[in-house]
Length: 235
Length: 183
Image (cartoon, rainbow over all chains, first blue to last red; front, side):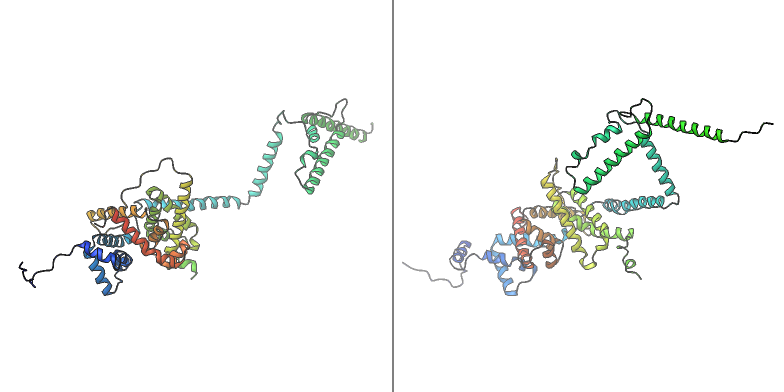
């Protein structure tokens, strides 16, 4: 058998990628993990020249790492451009309405109110308004379902109401109820009328009887003044 | 000269306030959009943020600390909004908008459109990251804050931000590769 001599000028036979991977797997492990560790520094240009050359050498042969590096570079360029977005043409006006204009409106309301309060006639107007409201409240008819004042006072016995209250409040309410009872009793004493029972008297009856009583006093006073007046001398 | 007159913005000058809104509305809206992924929600949140800032103009920091302060308010508002939305989801949740309307006046319309499509994909990939990684990317890579400011906002150690930063970028790149952007 005749062996042909090897030609020293022939190129090296192509080496399969699988062979490199197999060798690396049995020796140093996959270099892709190392490239991933260095990827960000590589994209940012922070690697030393030797390391950069080694990474480039790996990228020339590893398609996955090349794609990853390309995506990382793309993200690195694109991310800072995403800092600002356009909210639309009318957005500034909308914010201005919600801030300056709204605040201005509330300031205007406040200023108007303060101006009203600082007028010299405000005390007189407040008193007038208060009186009007009080009179209106007093002259409104009471609903029939409510008990008469006397009966109301009777129902306001302090015991059931004062259960949840503390001692000072209990004392104060007791004093209020006692004062109310005394007032009602004195009014009844003053309005002793013939055959009229004070029990169950309405407020309208009190007024009528009071006015009759006052008219009687006035009549009596008038009679006394006529008696005391000097009689003219007969000619 | 009184201090209040030196800074018309703090003095409540409407023109200064308008300039301020124009200067920062893109930033605030951009961050709010990344958090909420809904344009209308992001607009409402941005408006709320500016109302809050307007009510606290006296506390507005100087030029250096201004952006971190604004972004912190925006982040807090977004997190509150997301909590509310989680607790009471809206009856109708509109689809996320396809394009992310970037501010890129220097590009021609075709390039601008391509950029918007890419940005929309990056935005989509960002949503798939872990929460902390996404926040670090939003504040560091997108908003350009310093590591110390990010650590203060996120209430994590500076070392965590540093170590997480590169990992987050790599994770994002892997997501982008998975959707075919690196090919």
